[in-house]
Image (tube, rainbow, N blue to C red):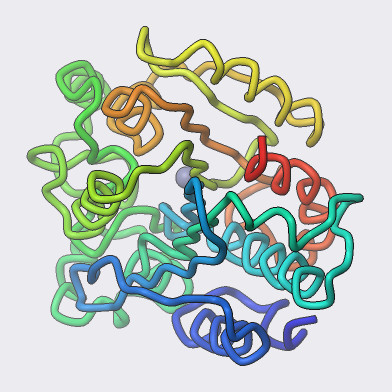
Length: 298
Ligand SMILES: [Zn+2]
């Protein structure tokens, strides 16, 4: 079990570093790499384990959605403990899983946004003033430039932009402004580069909230994606959904599906108002762990 004082606290940069440090100490076979840096120069680490076909988990696209990081780091800890002790996880022999699977986890793709949402504009460094000018720092979802990372990918871009216009979103904002061009931000560029350089068989993007799983993007979703989505929904009790309105296009999952024609899922964890509270961690984790393990091996 990870240090409870840190696991049950908002997943800011310091706490993420502490939790990952613990994981590396406990599990020497866990590997660390860095996929890039945020606008404010914060490192964007990735942890990976296993050999073979690669599955990607990405957490915390949005500032207030750091509970996704805690759920996945906790999952990693409990799963790796079973691997280490040659035990079973949800009835599956844990050390068999990683003979033909590599799990790659980016615990936080938007480290500046999370820091702003938790600690305020002062954590945005040289972007502090512009964050203050934009306003809404306590409800911050974007990166330090006021660009929503999950609206900054090259999928359905024109449609997304005209929808933004219709909704009066024309400039940097705490949420839902997609930027001047796709991949204009270092965070989305880092993630896109990672996916172009690594052949992932599927990707799961974790957000909060809504207890929903989104699986499709236009005509690009492979047939198997719906079946896999149905399985993930069945195992978690979450609803299998198709996006509407501003949630269409520009998202990482959309881009992944369109670019690689492989299954990509957005998982909206929990239910309530963002940021979801740490007291919800246990319930959300227990409900998702079986779905998470199957999402690696299916
Ligand atoms: Zn989100």
